[in-house]
Length: 358
Image 1 (cartoon, rainbow, N blue to C red):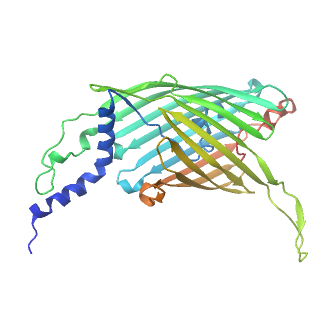
Image 2 (cartoon, one colour; image 1 turned 60 degrees about the vertical axis):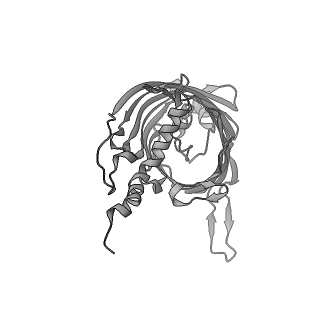
Image 3 (spheres, rainbow, N blue to C red; image 1 turned 45 degrees about the horizontal axis):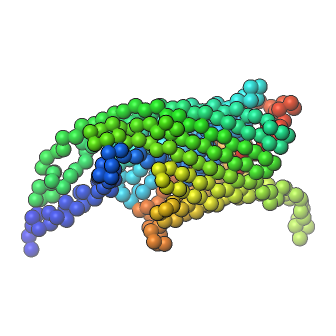
């Protein structure tokens, strides 16, 4: 039977449209629901490896000069995945009890149809309440540059009977600039820590269109955790008396995170176990009132000079695992440089624990 382009046209059309379908549905939903749409925040599964984006109070919390990078690859099976890149630097100055941080983030959606670029600065101050209680309040301000280029989108009425693109849309690229503010605080008490952060305090407008405004809704994050020593490095002797060795440091870091934004609540429960030079862990995440469970597995290696982590996130629907198409992959790398030796009069500052120490 000879090849019939007319017969196969519907199938060719579906093949060419499927990559844009999800983005179009998202845009249409935002436009039809109300004349005031809401944007979506990018988040990171390895939130303690991206501490300043998680809570600005973590700026300079570890008394190192940190240089960090992160890459997040979300939904690879869609053809045009969501990709987020980030770099940051933070430091601490003991003489003024202050931490400073700088973050650069780029978020690409739909193969570049929507890109968001942020430059943010964070400041934190370390306050001694008692010998065992330390609090770090913080402020953050930033500027965002948005780009939307819908000219590359293909709509159904743009295809001919053979499945080819007959014409182009008339949409033009748009850009916008927004200013954003956040605040947060973390507290340390012995081996316990917790905090709260409020992002997008003023709910900045992302885009102002003919059908209404798209805003970033305010996000409130509440988190808590603890350090539980399992093995401090005690010596033991092999049964065959080969000699002495040392079990490396082993500690568990259970944690809970609750995020509230735009009427939805996302809860995460899990933790990490750190060994002498590696760590493993995982988290369960559930969105209320509607949302299925997601499961995140985290692996990493670390030393006094660096920390490398990888996480794999599985999605589910009605209790069934989607697999690779809905997975999220995240890679982080942090370089640590201690800027000077500890001074005796500042010992209480370094004794405080604000999160996993690796």
